[in-house]
Length: 402
Image 1 (cartoon, helix red, strand yellow):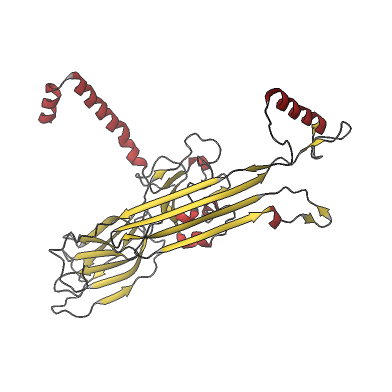
Image 2 (tube, helix red, strand yellow):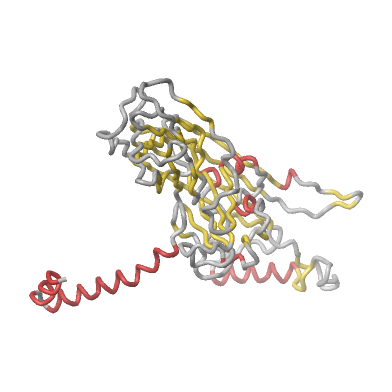
């Protein structure tokens, strides 16, 4: 503080003003951290010999798809926690301590925003013997004492299995019993759909103006093919969640791994695939087209270090315009269920000719038209993993330890 006051006294008034503005900016931005949503996971647990805690046991967590390593020591109570790990899995948890038998737990899944508990009981072993491997089950268990409210996880496998003609995230959110979902939004926990807080990798995708659908551009902010997991917190009482009513929808995108993977997809529907007749009644239909075309590609740039994931998508969307027509002549009935408006075709053609001859402006067709809305989506993600063993000096010597 003395150094700061010395700086404040010795510098010019301009620097004082800049210092005050900087302090004000930091004060204004500080509340924004309260509205941050979870985009990572955590693994914690306790290590003991069955009776007493084991201190300074080395816990190594490996994200198998990317080879990312996390290291930590247990404290005096035998507890450990590793925060901010990649969501999903599977993870392999390895616990080591000199004079104890190593323990490996495989197949651990870390859902978004959850703390997975992996406890370990080590058996004394003065001599090196074969390790014990335990395959974890119950990875989707809803019994988690670390939760602070109702939360639901939808993983990438479930997203792929859900039938969705519109390729819209609201189709996926229909899996949540506490939501009322349609093409404009998802009302969660009894709140209005505009009260939901939507993030993608922690970035806000809310409709700040509250008009139209609940997202600025409608639909899904990025392609469903780029979504790895969707976590929904329903009216949580955790103080770290704020800035919304009803539910927080947190989406996490896919990332590259050590294995190359990619896909090419095309979702297509049109009016030619719809029925045109009910019994003997011929329906008055207009041509429509909805086609999603895209690709995904992910893999390593530097194995175990640098990964990438790409997604590009183009949507062709032709929607039929108004199905109400102009009258053929003055004697024709209009309004109600007739399917005709008051102006006649001759009157509408006269307006078109006037605009074209007088102003050189052609407003287009006034009936039997379609609305075309092209949509381009592009997504790219880079991930860097620092796998340097920070606790190498204290790590138990083992041929399988990196």
